[in-house]
Length: 483
Image 1 (spheres, rainbow, N blue to C red):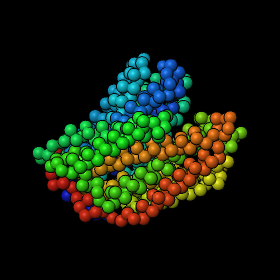
Image 2: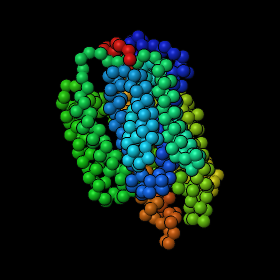
Image 3: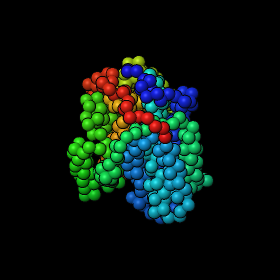
Image 4: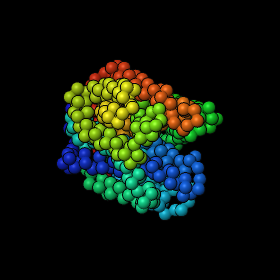
């Protein structure tokens, strides 16, 4: 890797390394927790507000839609005006959103509050940008891997806390914990060193930002809708087609204007394109599809064709263990990326994804087999989710880090949802006659999807060149002020 950008900018760590990484990991974990806390409370919301899953689901969907918009727009604004300032602001605004949901007694109020809380989606790319900005370049891969692992663990913690609190003391206390977590993280991040920001007269193209948000939201609306509706539903098709068309028009316009919202040209490098494709296929399998298939497999009774009969509490704790093991392995993934290049971490993660799929296909009928499989999955997700943002950084100038990683977060969100949708389709369209249980074929199709996606990610990783693109680590000469 090339020399640290801090030697060129004069921006040096003003805090001990463990404190810097700890604060950024805490912020990422709090944002991950906020994203998943209410997922486990949906059934309770349905009963409490006397509604159905389509309506109650918007308490989660609203968060996801705003989170995707916040990731891409927040990343760009943070790169331009100062990442620390925006990071603190997003966490505090997310706290306000949790308070709104807590204070209301209507479903629409909860949804509105969750939409406000969704701005926490911009936290992760800002954390990546701050790590790259504040740390010596040789320390960035490990720090990035730990931050990515903390975000995953935060999401898993949300599921564990929801399972424990949703019945007693109640779903509203989830919002109290969520608000407390984002509030503490926001206040803690004030301790981060001042963040460099780009000076000069360059303006942010807010109109382009609005168009981009609309395009991403339409695509996500369509993909999310396929889970509860179907792929042939007119709303699903219209959302995806209109979103992709609007995205194509946005990209064509951004390439022509002098001050684009997103520097599209930076996203067309060979490494970035291959990393984006690898992100899409890998998260479809080892994150989206695997998450739903494993949860269903664990909680299905043993009398069914496929199932090991774990309780809901045992299931969420086992999945929490996957995330915890992933966090413990993240420094190893970062160390490998620093020593041999992030491509090698992606290769390792993809191979373990294939091994996980094979193990599930062969040994899914025993608790031991499933536990071993999820251990392989922990390695796969840890190495893959650590490698992806580092690969983006290797191909992107420092001052565009949060912008580029924010777009990648959106890709992860869309294709994770796609993987969940495909797994839902397999499970719901292959039922044992006169029972609510999915057949062996349904799970076989799901395991095949995980293996195929992992294999495709492995092949794409082999085509990624090691090292950085020329100038990727060189910061803008305009970096001057602090925020």
